[in-house]
Image (tube, rainbow, N blue to C red; front, side, top):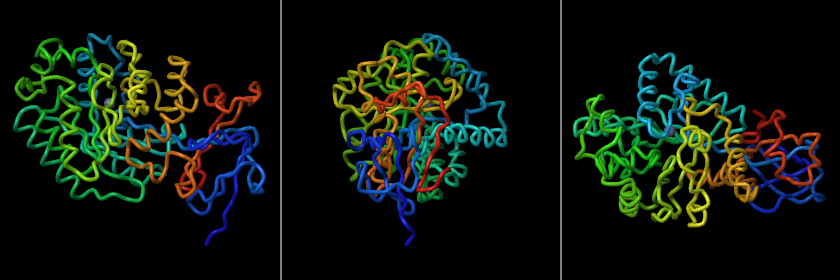
Length: 404
Ligand SMILES: [Zn+2]
């Protein structure tokens, strides 16, 4: 058996207990063996004036859109379908080789940020081969689109075939992503929910989406007509119908796989969303860039709803740095504790994606996935969370017990 080694730094934030000043983490092979306060274990490596935190979880990306950086700027909230038009136009310019390059570009940005677990939505599941081989954990959600009976059936068949040949690895698992209520029939959404894999769908992102479902009117009508996919009878009757349908279908699966609702900008916190399997993925900077109304984060948390963070893609976000999302939340919601915000980019993300038994906190028995954040010289280091919000010094990442 390989020898254990012990790491320390000014602060150890385990995500599973109080901050430990000069605490130690002992690692054997790819696992955490012990977490301890200063004293009992002599460190082999002292990272000095730094903070050690669990590896970051970015629960919502589209790596295949990484080439869109700057090409598809966010619109006003009212013109949201215009942004979708620009993304569709961009996708039509990309060859398979371009997409493969874009996925690698996006992955490298995520690795640089200290991400050790990703939830990635990919057309045709295209990011699977790259992510399955990369030094990162991931759930790859194959995108499903279809409002008409025919398109829904084709999406169902292609996704079923993909699931049959896409086998989980030690670090990568397949999932499904019925795209959104305006692009996915209720039937297709139900078939995805019935599969025994994680599911992520965009939900209640714009007011236009809410208007489409509740009134069959607004800017989405012309958008869907242009695309030749206007199928009003296939749509749900409200954005709130999706969580209720999901709850019914998931109740028949034991255990129920993870269910993630990306955005939820217009989702009522009164809906029954507080359960073990369900998570809202808030994408703070993208939400702000479109000028959507203030996000009901406090309300979700007060209702016991699990919320984690995602960057969304470079088609709407300036970068794929999930810590920058946490910093943005810190500025918008300064009353939230450092512990609460750190949890949103670590353990809550791991729970959301179904990986919390393995990663998401620095806990004995879990994978040794961590990020080292140096404390700026201007910071006395008395607040263990300060360097999360302030330091731009380069980060180091340990993944499965090895420096990445
Ligand atoms: Zn998205």
